[in-house]
Every structure is written in C-alpha cells, then in structure tokens.
Length: 504
Image (cartoon, rainbow, N blue to C red):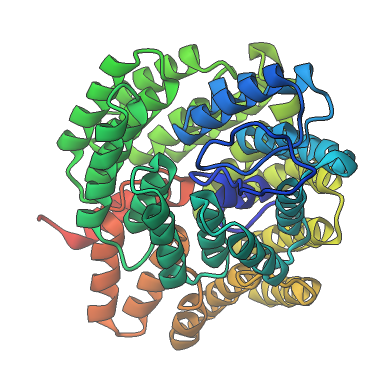
C-alpha cells in the first residue's frame, strides 16, 4: 500500500494524533475515583502505579517527547496489562502501522474493561483504519458534547475537521481547547502548526503560539524547533538555524533537532554539512536512524544528483536489518525509502528503476494492508499499485495505458468515504493530459490536487505555463520555491523552481 502523496496509512493516523493526544474526560460510577488531570478523562485502571506511569507518559506526549512517552506507557501496560487507555495512547507513539495496529487491537480486545471515554477513543481511531471519515467526525462531536470542559476533546474534533479539509472549523475547535485551558501546551502546538502549514497560513499567529510553547516549557527543545520551523516557512533559514541551535543546548541528545538542522543546511546548499547533521541524528536516534538516513539520501537531490540519492536510498533498504532497525518498524522504513526511490525514478524518466522499486515495494505494501486488515486498507493497496503502474506507463510514453490504470484506480476507490480519495487520480489524469499536450485539461485536473502536495502543485504550475497562463504559473512558482519543508517531491523540484524565478 502506498499513497500517491508519499504519505502512508501511518501518516494519516499521525495527522489525527500529532499534538492532540486525543483523550477526553468522563465521570461515571464505573470509573476509578482518582483525581484526573485537567486535560484528561478517567481511564480504566485501579493500579496507582500504572496510573502514575500513564500520567507521566501523557505529560511527555503533550511535550512531543514520544520516545520517553512510549517508555512510560509501556511501563503502565506492564503494571496493568488490561489498561485500555495505555494501549490507546501508546499507539500515538507508533513508528509503523504494525506498532499502531498492535496497540489498537490490544485495546479493542479489552474494551469490556474500558471507560466510556476509552471506548469512544478506540472507536475514533478505528475509523482511520476503515476510512469512515464522517463517522469519525460524529464520534469526535460526541466526545465534545460529553466532555466540553476538557481541551483534548476539542483537539480531537479539530483534527477530524482537518481530515475533511475544513480548516476554518478545525481552527475554531483548536481555539476552543485554548478557551478551556489557555496554557494548554498541546493546543498551542496544534494551532501554531496549523497556521504554519494549512491555508490560509498566518506566520504571525504561528510565531505567537510557538513562543508560548517556549514560555510554558523553556527546558523543552520542542518549542525552539517549532519556532525554527516557522522561520523556515518564511525562508529565514539562518534564523531557523539559530532556533535549532538553542534546542541543542536545551537537549543535546534530541535527534530530531539535528534532523531539522540537516534539512536547513540542505536548503542552504550545504550538502556535506547536512549529511553530517543527519549522521548525528542517526547516532542519537534510539530507533537506529531510519528516518534521518532517508533524508540524508534526499540531500543529494538538492545538489542536483538524483543517481547518488537513489543509490543511498537503496543502500538504506538493504542495510535496515544490519543496523538494528526494530523489527516492528522494518516494513515502514523500507517502504519510505522505496517510495522516495520510485518518485526519483519517475521524475527522471527511469523506467527500469521505477519498475524495480514497484517490484520490491509491492510485498511491503501488502504487509501494511494485512496489518490494518480492513476493506479500506485493501482498497488502498490495490489503488496504490494501480497508481504506480500508471506512472510507470507514463515513463514508457504510453498515456493510454496510464489513463486506463487511473480509471481502474478511481473505480477501486469509489466505495471509500475519504474526502481526499481522488487526489492521486487527478494527478494521474493531469499527467496524462500533459503527456498528450492537452494543457488546459492538465490544468483542470491538477488544480484538484491539494495545496500541500508540492510535486503535484509544481506540475500544475508547469501546466499553467504550457497553457499560456504565465501569471498563474509564476505565482505558483513563487509560492512553492521556498516552501522549505523536506520531502522527496520538494527535493526533486526546488532547484528548478528557484531557477525559473531567476535572481531575487
């Protein structure tokens, strides 16, 4: 299973989880009589030791310290193996679909011991595996109606609105979380991140929320890295580096900070420095650095060297076991590297290596679909294979087959209830139209792709230019050129975007 936008099922899950740690409160006779933290709802354990570990884990999760949070939540489970809430919240720290599904399934197997809030949370997370977007929204609304005084419930609702691309409603829900608790770290982080990435962006408001993170938790590197990200989004790369350096002083062992420094050096054209930063991230990462290794490979793209990037990505795939990447994360790690490899092969018209990537990735996609074990996951697997086979046909100058594969993909996805299910279809049909020289149709199709899919938006800009819409093309080039957030699509096109704009 592979999503056209270089995301995975896990990426969709994390959209729900990042910054929200979706808990809610509840007061029913069946709940424990322990005092609940203000941001939580009661959870079903009578073990004081397990509850203490759980509370410590949730506090760390709020501060975006997933590694330590996972350790505490694991401790809570060891102390109380029937602790449903601990399984659910540990799933937030998953590094792979396998890890996420293991915890979700363990929680669902013990629901007879769960509180109402835990049952709602399990139901909500399940909708992300089944593609039931509207049902997820209904569950989130039920949480807010049942627990209006708990800010996490509002964050859950906001993230569900984002799932349906309703940014205005999401921001209103996030703000309601802050109305309940003005000093709620997770709400400031979530709202600031939303203003940073989602249209309409507002860097001023994002900065305000990230500065609040630093004021609330000055010893936590997360606030400094978030503020650095905000500077990156404004193309203030030296200011971003300054914030990341502050984060390293607060916590010199935080591997993510060195990864962000690596990104920034990549954008500054400092490839060797970037790779040194990624090596440091690998050294510090308890999970043996599968993520920074992939970004290190992508750094070659910013230097205009796709062959070096592909070699490094394939090397990563082949050495994952040897370097000690946890078994539960191997499929995800290999898939991410092969995904990037495939996009480079497609972009450079390298049919043979694209075919090689698809062949290697298909059993991994199948494993991910089997881990999720829902009809939606099977649809995603089948549609993902068709997506890549369509792109393969385009590299073979066969737009007819590419279009046929795209239509098959559309048919497979018809039962899905996800708002964004046809994003990949529109990208394919736009690419087919470009190949055929039908630039107006290419514009029409590619305009349906989301604003945050950088590679699709780049192709839209090219289509606008080819269709004679020069002003629209330049506006898009300007918007995309200094996006400054790292993924394979952006890495493939950043240099061309800047070259097209000329001296600034």
